[in-house]
Length: 269
Image 1 (cartoon, one colour):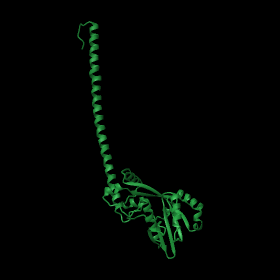
Image 2 (cartoon, rainbow, N blue to C red; image 1 turned 30 degrees about the vertical axis):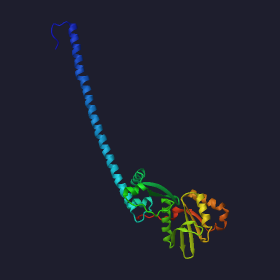
Image 3 (cartoon, rainbow, N blue to C red; image 1 turned 60 degrees about the vertical axis):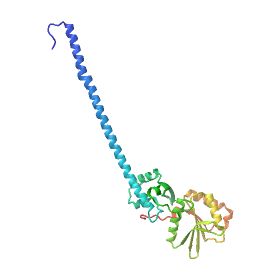
Image 4 (cartoon, rainbow, N blue to C red; image 1 turned 180 degrees about the vertical axis):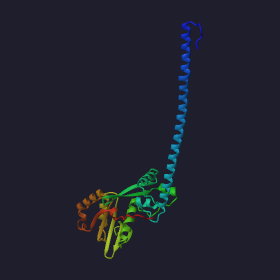
C-alpha cells in the first residue's frame, strides 16, 4: 500500500520502482533461472540419449562383428572352401537379404574379404575371396594348393573340375604338354580329350594360351576356353576368328562363360 499524505510525484516514483523490482523478480530472474535449468535438463537428456545411442551402436557393431567372425570361421574351415557368396551364408543359416548385404559389407570393410563377380548366363555369381587378414584373424593356415593365377582362378578351376567329374570325366590340374605349356585342366573320358583354359585376365593372353595348347604333339578333341564375362568372350571369339595360325583348329575350339560350368548348390559345407 502507498504511504498516506505523500506528494503525488513521490507516490508515482515509488510505484514505478516497485513495479520495476517486481518485473525483475518475477519475469527476468525466474526466466533466466528456468532457462538455465531447462538448458541443464536438455543437456543432461542429450548426454543420456547420446550415450544410449552410442551403446546401442556399439552393441550392434559387436553383434555384427561376432556374426562376421563366425561366418569367416565356418568358411575357412569348410570341407569345400571354394564357395560362392550364398553358399557361405548358407553355412551360417543366414537367409535374410539385408543381413547378407550388411555382413558382406562388414567383411569387406574390415579387409577380411574381397568381392569378385562371374557371369552365369544372364546372372552374376558373387564370390567372396578370403584375404590374408582373414586367415590371421581365424588362425587358419592358407592352403598352398592355390595356382599362380590367384584365388579366383583356382576357385573357377576347382568348381569346373567338379562339374565335369560329375559327368564322368577324369581331371588333371596344370597338365604339362610336350612344349612345357601347362593346360589349366586336362579332361579325359573314353576317347575324349579336352583341354580347358580358365580366362579371367585378358583376351590377348588367352589367345596366346590357345595357340600354345595347339602347338604340341597331343591335340585334344576339344579346346574349351572359359571366360569371366560376355565382354571377354566376345573379344576372344573375335581374336580367334582372325588368327590364321588357328585356322585348322577352329572347329574344336569353343569359347564359353566359366560361370555356366559352376554348379550352384543350395547347401554346401
